[in-house]
Image (cartoon, rainbow, N blue to C red):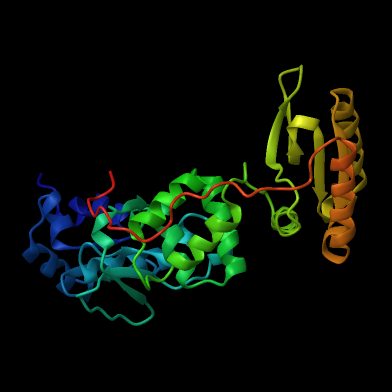
Length: 330
């Protein structure tokens, strides 16, 4: 018994958020005329030129984003805040569909933010939840053009922590995409100038605040989230560490005031001291309302441990504009 076209396109619809176009239909042996027939019989709705959606399927943000990309045609891809949402950056759950298209092309669709780029073809897209997206390294440039400095710092921290981007890789991305006047390059350049040479990644916004305080005070830079192995095979993770003198600085959010958490912290501190570490803790109120006292306490502790508290910034990579190698990045 022959298989109905409606059944043949089910895998395509499932993989493409209940959308299908003639190219996707052809992959499973369904012709354009059969798509027209399914539209007439009420199985599909046409939502744009050559693009259909399953009639009974719910309309979702993912579907709207992929529809915009398909209607804009390759190499259009999701970008900016839309990719941040797909990557799970927590601030952007409610972002609108947002795509980037080549600069010599025009595209408009209600509810969709459209950007244009001269070099969108140079970094191939990645698929995230079935949607072609600018990769995290390109997002690191793009999203700086649409966010303030504080929000951009948070997103960049998430990209580095969850997607393995190093400062060295980000410097290479900046060199690749740096054109005079290019939106997004300026914020990334400022981030590199400020944080290049910092080891590790702060885990919370409160820890990021402390790191900024240390940088602005020109104190020696700690290692963020240093892993300290224990004899039993387990490990502790220290918020800020100076391994050479075994100084651990812990930054406690409000949940550390809970009795069970405070008891666990005390046991942890005792164990670290047995291993030769000096442990200092600062809570959220101290960091927010008395930052100068926090810095004075850290400076005093470093001096007690024999650390030279003068800091020379590490050499930056060459970030000057230069001729760009426009070959696609593998």
